[in-house]
Length: 161
Image (cartoon, rainbow, N blue to C red; front, top):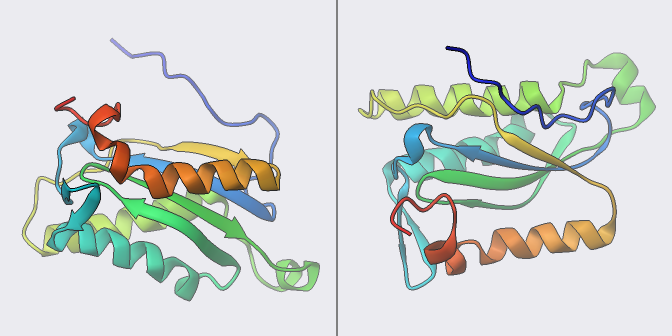
């Protein structure tokens, strides 16, 4: 039986456009592979550090993106990524879409996690995205990310809650 999946993409929108994007990427089956939360702070283990390092790698690999707030949680990841650049850059270089950028992040982090010995690790298929449209929305999303470890007990991704 094929499940009907809700498409959360904005129809007709070019996800390589300049702007801020909020993403949430979950681990398959919500397995807590990346560490644990102690006293409202995320304590990354080896695998969580790989995820963090791969996120930080993205703007080194793709000059047209910048990172904003992000947090690696026990079994998911939240981050704000902005695609920047001017028309000249876009005519010379192909700007990858948000989906391609997140694909690169998931693929390279998975490969390094597997290489570190966690062969059963998998990301959940797809990811949640939100186009940030104004400063107020950006501020709200930043606060959500920063406060995510503090609110872990009530988080829907927390399988223990």
